[in-house]
Each structure stands twice: as C-alpha cells, then as structure tokens.
Length: 225
Image (cartoon, rainbow, N blue to C red; front, side, top):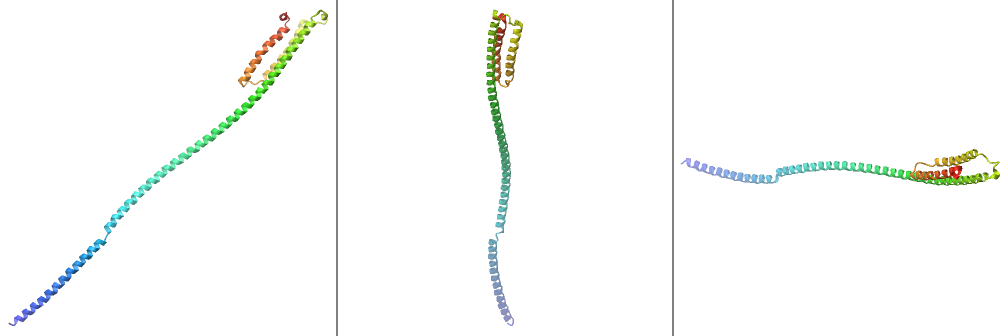
C-alpha cells in the first residue's frame, strides 16, 4: 500500500513527460514542415541553373557574333581590295584615255601641219608650173623669132653678112641650153614627197621632150627641109 502513491506519482510524471514529448514532437514536426516549406521556397528562388543556362546561351551568342564580325571584316577587306583594284583600273583607263587624247591631238596637229605644207607645196608647184609655161612660151617664141631671122638671113640680100651655119647652130644651141637649164633648175626645186607632185613632175617632163624635139627640129636645117 505504501508503494501505490509512488506508482501514481510515477504515472503522473510519465504522463507529464509523455505530454511534453508529444508537444516537443509536434513542435519538431511543425518546425520541420516550416523548414521544408522554407527550403522549397529557397529552391524556387534559387535560379542559378537558369542563370547558368542563360550565361551559356549568351556566351554562345557572343561567339556567334564574333564569328559574324570576323566574317564581315574579311568581307570588308575583300571589298576594299576590290575597290582599290577598281580605282587602279580606273586610273589606268583614265591615263590611257588622256594619252590617247594627247596622241590624237598630236596626230591632228601633224595632219594640219602636213596639210598646210601640202597646200604651200601645191601653191609653189602651181607658181613653178606657171613659170615653166612662161619660160617655154618665151623659148618657143624666141626660137620662132630666130627661125624667122634665119630665113631672112638666108635670103640673097644678106648673103654677104650671113654667118656660117656652124656658128648659128652653136648660138641657137647655147640659147636653147640656157632656157632648158633654167627650166630644169626650176623643176629640181619641186618637192618629191607627195604623189601628186611626182605626177605633176612626170606630166611636165612628158611635155618637155615634145618642145625640145620641136626646138631641135627648128634648129636642124635638114629637119626643116
């Protein structure tokens, strides 16, 4: 009987301890739930993986942009070289055009100078031809005059004063040689550069033998007979 109160006290104490333990357990469970909730919220708020993924993506984009920039630089360098080559070609073309224009101007000037020289030579040739025609006409008139004088001197009235045929022929030949030599000297001054001048000289020379033949015929007594 004396031990019964002790057992009751122990039972009460055990109940109190049990209640305390249950209360602590309930508090621990609540704390664990709170910690779990807090942990879940922390996990939700922790976006390091997402940030890492974004960083990797950004790094990849930066690498791609660097590659694109490098490609663009290479394209710009190639385009710059092409532009430099085009400018060089344009400069060469411009230099060739200027040189061609200068050559054309020089050729036009040379043609103009040649035309002026040709006109001058044609004028001089025309003057020389006029002089030759005048000299030939004068020579022919002189020969005709001397022929008439010879006929008059061969008449009986002038038999005493008649000169020998050899002396008369020498005088006529000397006068004719002087006239023909003067004409040949004028012809020698004519230019031999143009074909037209050569043709004119050939024409003049073609005319001269006929007059020389005519003059020789007039001087030759046997031909006159």
